[in-house]
Length: 87
Image (cartoon, rainbow, N blue to C red):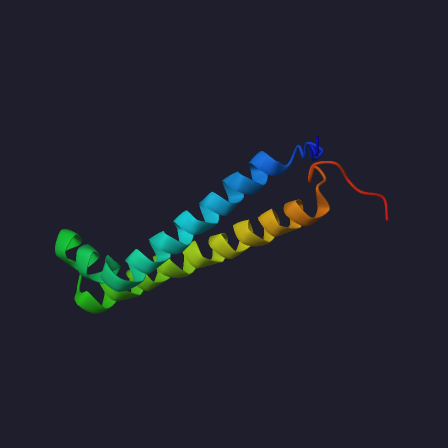
């Protein structure tokens, strides 16, 4: 039988990959409809509401990129990130 060795970081990789997809989806929604929803719900002027929507999208994209990079790093190294590696 061809069993692969268990990778303890695999659940973390799956979690971070899912988080990345969620954050990118939230960024897209915020980019396209966030300003209009903020304007309608808070009675904020349209320009400020659009800037807030773009800011939310930028923050989501940033954290999505960080989560993706961390997932890729865990997937390639296969090590626990909390233990320091000796170089």
